[in-house]
Image (tube, rainbow, N blue to C red; front, side, top):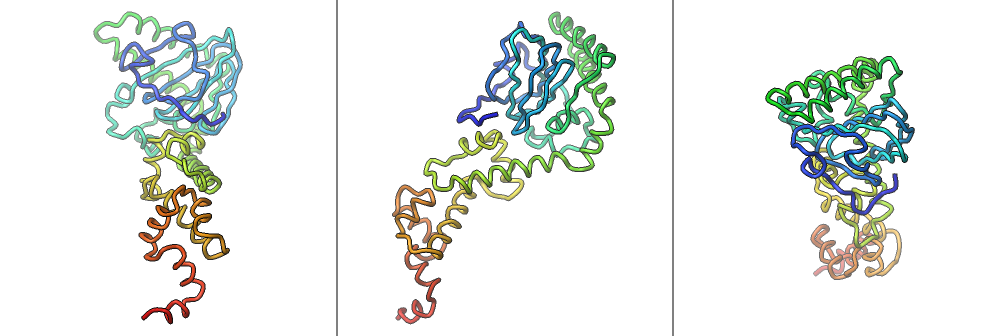
Length: 309
């Protein structure tokens, strides 16, 4: 999935007729063809038309009788071919997990013992939920019941819809119980997060000289939402994005100053600072000395001390 400069984020009001639960097929709305994310849960079910799904930086097959489980804020896209047949289910966190007082950004941290219904969503990047015909037919019946019920909402319909949704998720969890348990035991979600942060770190290293480096650009390049990336940085390393970038730029600046003879202005440019004076000011705030004096002191501390009154 090629990175996009701007990845849209959808809320339930934009994509669903109701705020809690909504089910539709390909006739209800054209499928998204570019990477996007949404603030709600989504399940896509392929009834016909083989394709692939891109979720984060992972590509997995999305053939007939396959289900895709997509967490809130996860960048993804499924390019459905012409004449494909699919069903999309959108639902809010409070609809599925009203008891779970958890920020959507922290769903990957929730134990499957506490919320087993999250399992296929948490490990979608690691598994292909492709069913055989015998196992798929009962799910199709559940989908049809949901469509009929959602189109004719009455008092009590919401509770029945939730029950049907939990049956669908529960059947998939039962069929994939062993690989889901192994992934949970192996902390696959945490490893995925660390991998994403590794991609971000690599991108920063290769693009530290970009004066326009910003949160949205880095998030798009690493298949994360800006909000998600901000949240992860605070949890994993205790820094904001701006603090991290400044730290990386100052680290690069120290290397240039101590391992070469480039002028300060060139060092500033190589570290992503368009303004030499601003670079010198920030460098002095962090190191107590302007760049040129820092270089002289580090290379010849004795001469610097001798020059002092």
